[in-house]
Length: 217
Image (tube, rainbow, N blue to C red; front, side, top):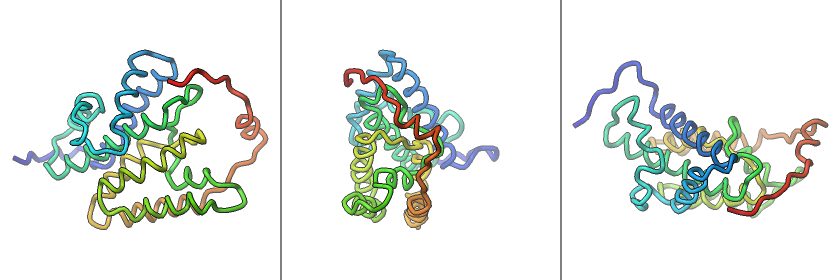
């Protein structure tokens, strides 16, 4: 039975984004403080990276999906899309943060298109990475989208490049609407082309600062 949501409720994509962002921020804070519960939770969540929630029932109650229902009820169609989007964002974040002990990989305002462009050299296009980005944009199923996002996130982890996972979750929900993937693809492409590497002395110094490495977890 469908229950009508209160008029005051936020749009579902905003609810998905804020729910994912709040949970990931808690995990990130705990992980960077080396708190055992956060380290253990991220290790569990990594098993779901690149998969959909129904494929990993052992993560029920661990991935934060219950937060979607704290504010409003969802129809079955809305729930399937919202749960998939949040689950993908949270588990991909867990993969991204692995062994990154000195800084959080979730950072507000970093669109996926910008993050992918930062994987490439300042003065050119890395064709291998570009092709992977194009393949991501042409995904037509949730599973294909999940698999291709996992490939991209693995590259971001390799180069310690942050991503806004609240924004990613929101866009992953919207991508499942009719014509939604086209609109999300346009946004990713725009962010990719518009990115300009910052070269201020302050930022350059911060980027070049050496950080002690902890043992990989």
